[in-house]
Image (cartoon, rainbow, N blue to C red):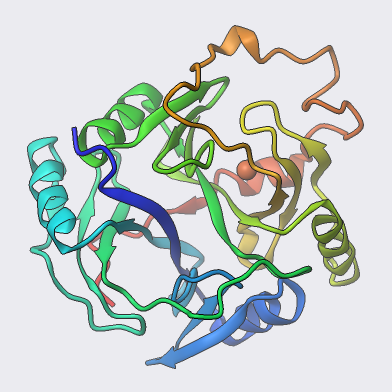
Length: 301
Ligand SMILES: [Fe+2]
């Protein structure tokens, strides 16, 4: 098992019908910053070190084009390439230099549920990385719908070295000391459930919720505090019906963390988090959480 070779979740490539409108939203309201534009695509960073965490590409409908994982170094990229093929990835490119802003060395592949992924090492980093009020630092986790929850998690463990942190309705997996970078949600097909952006604290989550309300995107679930991960959350339906989350205070775990079972994450009737203050997830958000599909075919920038 290639434990430790993936060091983080860098971010996602999204396909959108109107790149300019999405880029305006993700800068003016969501508070990311544009770092590059190329061939009609826009690349946005958070306040952390990753070259970019979100890339918007022109497509005729909202789609998840690729999930980008960071490998420790070029040697890890090569070993992970062998590992994903041995674990049954149905498609994989050869490792090579990446011709896009941020560069690096890596490869694209597809997991057995049809998710388009890349493993990248040696890409650019910002020297001014820091946590700032009202600015997402990074994408801290993705939740992905899967028809085969334990099989999906098992592939990510076997092929990529992730470890299971907890099981509730979802299966949470980690690749560093964040409680989870990815979680698998039971669903009919392999689609995006939501994308979570990490803020520097609860006040930044809530001021962000204020900006979202002003921009016509009210809270669809929250504010609340999750059980698994213990993070504070507020969920929104953004442009293109991508479900996006501001979160803070994600729990840190180490090798001694005890994996809990679904029966250990039960809330009182009518509650859906640890505080019990929020209404349940809205019907609008639940519908949006099942409609963004992965693009077909390996992602090639
Ligand atoms: Fe989340």
